[in-house]
Image 1 (cartoon, rainbow, N blue to C red):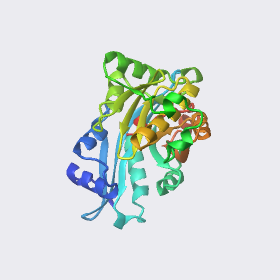
Image 2: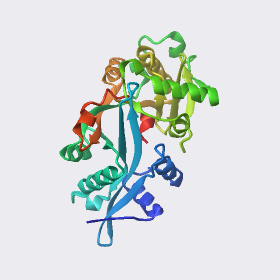
Image 3: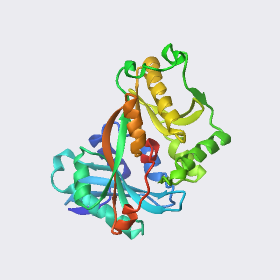
Image 4: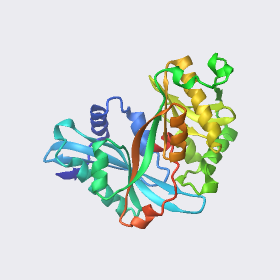
Length: 308
């Protein structure tokens, strides 16, 4: 089994074979060309002789806190193994090669986002990764679970979030909300310049939109069955929790769609579960030679739009 490179078109075709509807060339360019660290993404494949088995990319980010904690990471991105070649140790080899490249660029850790039940979680754990809890949040398939206690304006369909036209002031407010969420508690998050934040959350091929709800700004996108919350101002966590419940009722009632969300904050997950949301547990994994870098990591606030 050797490391190789393949044309972009072939890599993209394999990705969509393993993950149907992963995306087109525009999505590929955004994922691997959105270099917020001024560090070029890595993309490689595994082969046995002339037979392609698997592939993966690495994108680079920095996690930091208001107390000046910093850890640089390379994130395993767009990893795939062709069905015919699973069970041959391909993912273990991908982890090894990815970690080698991350260390070669003097980054602190190799990161990955996985659900708890995903077999990849076991491989990353076996490699020695720190397994930091994360939560995939979604709403029920009916509006009834969120109807209790919502205001009459919400329940009768009069309430709805306001679509906000993006301008410099709105982008500044969004970036400020991201930079200061939980600052008093020394919560760590991905670090972005204002321009990098705009590219990561708003200037996506999926054409997200900015909403205002109960005085809170958020960034969302729609798929065929869900309204995905990429970013939310949750400096007032109880208000945000209630707002997301109202958004879930609105999405079900007006659009026939569920809410899809992501958090690494256990307190937020607990509040959302109490108001009717369902949770799929997962991990942000961090593999590092220096265990103190991951052991001393403050609580993390990673949102859905940070992930890809």
